[in-house]
Image 1 (cartoon, rainbow, N blue to C red):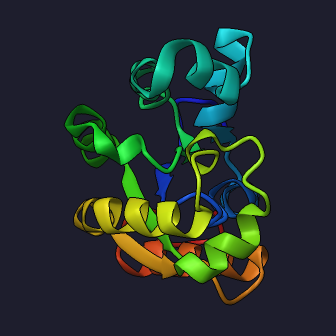
Image 2 (image 1 turned 180 degrees about the vertical axis):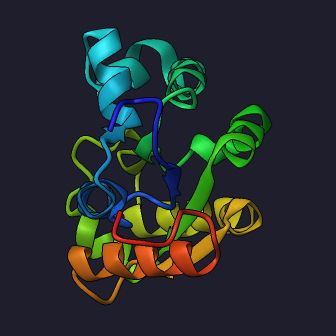
Length: 181
């Protein structure tokens, strides 16, 4: 499939929810490409996300994120977004208007396990990781829920099973065509 054919799906959710891992499996199931918006940002910047945060702050990173999402919204595939991509109304409108949105929901306890020391995650370098994850979840969860076409628990099953569950849910709701792929 070309980058302009096929489904356009946005995976949203908190850090550690499995957007990238599940996204790869989902793209395989659907026979389309997988794009990680954070990886795309790093490639375009020629620097990793912690460096961008250090030099440009979170606001500089968020500006880059919006530009990348605008470009990705013109392509098809499974697009894993950063946990804070939903903060900008412009991003939420773009995702809602150009594709189906899947919220991978996990608990803060699961996030703590999955994010380890928080290395490479600038927002977790600011003191108590658990307190920060709780704060981010309380701020962001209503936005995730309001934007999502489908809400899936990303915490229990392995990534392949979660991807399959998403595929079934999307087909049942008519958000992607029924059939073999």
